[in-house]
Length: 115
Length: 401
Ligand code: SF4
Ligand code: SF4
Image 1 (spheres, chains in turn red, cyan):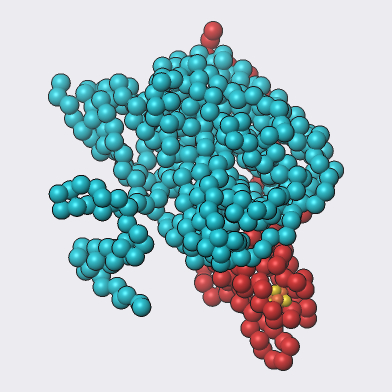
Image 2: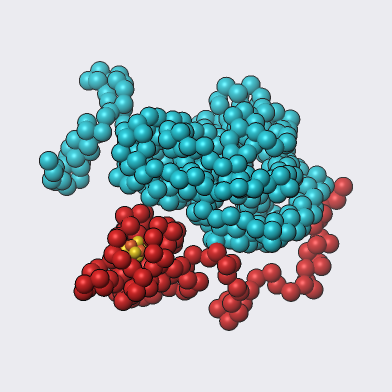
């Protein structure tokens, strides 16, 4: 027995393409079920606040702005992207998008209001 | 030569987690080791009492980034037991499926880490590259690579379709090929065999006496596996064997883990061919009837245990988590005895520890004569901590009525 059992594989790899992706220049497709930044459809919302009650990290707040008109305040820094709110909403007023590049240098931009 | 006691940590000698060890050595030889945890206490159990069962599930899932499905399933099983919920068979099968995929990614990750600890970084690179295959599968099935959020009280949140099944089967074939290659490496590469053989030995008797769990126990020929001993999810209907080994050392633990990978592939194929039709969840009440339950789950690292007590409201009264690493810590001290200091990182890494999952708190009450009188209740603990901070840190917490 000799050391170097992986040598063949290592040498073969010299002629293979890298296994990594050249992100951010090349972006790979996210899975269909991916849970990213939330989207809110104010026309569907009835203000029941079930989403607020079920959110594990208090990341979503529904404000009443006028009669039967609601806006969603979403804290991207608190959200754990579980999409429980999307599932709990009886009116399908919330949606998890595929947007995940949310890093920011200012905390203010992590508080989004969707009308 | 005189015995010396040296502190190691709170920076971990092998993994990226803080805990501190106190090692007594005689020259290069380790005489004994004691460890101190508590650098990673996150107060998760207490936080659970302030959230609803549904919210707790996402919190509990974040106990560990690697065994996230383990913790959420273990917790949810206890809740379902208290509520008297019978989950649909399809949900049970898919829970097992995600559980096995998680085991595969965890074992491949361990293989890489173990390679890294012994200076075999080639193994790290290749096993982590192959681990991406299973990470992609998990992302496809559940949405995300970590913290899958597939469970819900009463079942699971996402169903799988025929396309998914085809993709999983294809990926499992590739992974099986690769694992066969790693088994070949593990049994042929002399540097690996000689580096790991006889290191961190734990005899069958010691494994049993010290309550070792998971691959640590199984590598000492102790066939302890919750999937067999106390079947949950779909494991009662699946046919698989408990992989054991008689080497009793780190090499044995490596063989057990790669052997378990092969078993996991077989389990996944069985799950996908026998996947029952039907609903994926039953409706769960928000308030859980009063009661208590303990649930066990075979994490990739060993038996995980959760205790949940309900008082009839929508929030649990008490949640207790015992992660597998805690059960294996006694064994680690034993394994290190009479070993060399240079083996310290790999022996610890061989139980696949996760110290932040392990960090729980218990404060004993001492009588004036120093005798331990038992655990404190929450009220006493709160008063104690407030007093402690006042005395030791000069912080004056206001007590709200
Ligand atoms: S659960 Fe849906 S409908 Fe109700 S407040 Fe939230 S977004 Fe609006
Ligand atoms: S995705 Fe989860 S954490 Fe984020 S707002 Fe919705 S429920 Fe809250």
